[in-house]
Image (tube, rainbow, N blue to C red):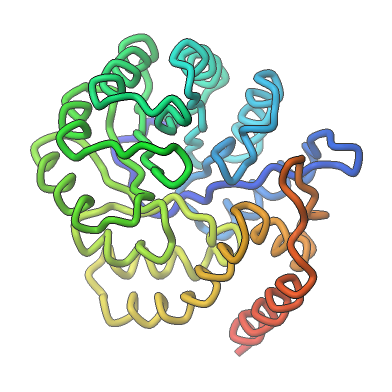
Length: 298
């Protein structure tokens, strides 16, 4: 376990590779973790929505986290959320026991709790599991938004140290940064197209889908912005814009898994009910990745 004082930089939201029979391909998982570490990312995030956490068993969930921790020396932020508070608490305890450096906790989905329900949910876990925790707000998947005042209340808890912003509302992100400035609390972008604007508002980095595919470029963009080199960050933002959009042509992680297959890093298998990328989008994505490969060679 690494001592995380701040969540700064780039944290790829890792894919979970599957064998043809649907079992987890742990060798490819470990190889992928090492590839991303060698590319210079600041940490790894297994078992988020990009990792298809909704379709793995609890034991598989912890086995994936354990494998990633064993494979690398960078910090590991383990996804351990659920729409069931007791279930999220159990997963969080197990992830912490496995050695996770921090936890990423999606807000309860489908239930659509009131704001006081969010506070009780997150504080219950933070009271019981003594590792840094990141609140993950993605209303498009969960059906409910965590309001800025709620985030500010949660930030007062010593174990709740970050917020992943994937709601697409930059005004809300700015308000959250404003309301949490006096706390030890970091705001991370959860949408790659918003990495640059969120850092400009006071964010500290990103939990990134695109970093699975272009980890060096995404890292250069983020660190250029964090270092105040906005001219370079803007250039990279526009270079990467087509990829940011392509990875959401269909439901995440369908396109990013296709990208890992095109690049030869995995077989691209998904678990039902997700389906493979449509042939026309697969061909478009292959052409786009070839353009980035050409840029790399220059």
